Length: 301
Image (cartoon, rainbow, N blue to C red; front, side):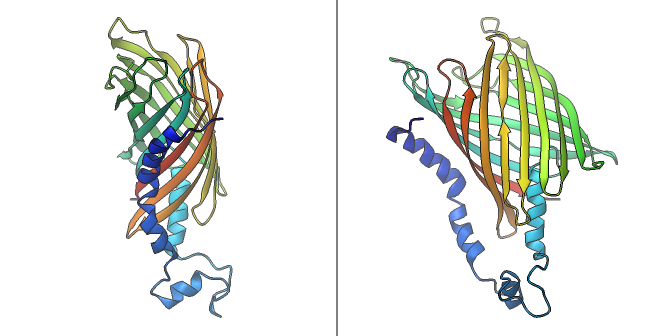
């Protein structure tokens, strides 16, 4: 595992995106509440006589814990807008770096009394260093991936599922686009209970139109995930974002571990996440390791 000083500017950008705003948040979170009763509730040692040390948290904290639990569900009835900053190291013979900012709005829409239609869109903005001697770097948009899940509003015994189509839109710059329009099925299934979430999200995309000079697309994506959410809204997530290219016969298997926490700016809840990943499997010239910083705006109904 290597880390070079020239990688610091991109890491600094990621930190600025996801850690710059929280600087003021931490001061707000740590400031003493104006209400003396709220201050007493925040400390077990100073709890008033009529409230035991293990009393339930204030409503705000309870709400944040609920939001964190909903975030662990990819098809929750919660509007969210994640800004996911990814840094990946060591592409090609030049050990080039790549910085990717994924803007990923998730919007649920009610369909009748019993169903929700959840749209999940990924808009990547990429900056890539040269990967071969004499090569050039590139910066621009990547192709947009958009998924639609039809999911029941009510979970049964903590079991949640959703199915629908996924579309690949060839919106990216030449360096980052497959130059193909793609489509296929997507599905998610998960089980939630007692602060834990265990599930699997999967899709497969085939190219159905596009420039004939470019290779066809046939790619499977598998994301098994496990999240443990604490009552204070801190969450720990372990997952893989595995993809298999059926045309080139290549696997990419990054193993991700991340820690998140819900905070507030005034009335606006925000989830902050930091994580790291190791590529257990990659094609020749693929990345070796990476980091992730995520700022997610939450809009509970």
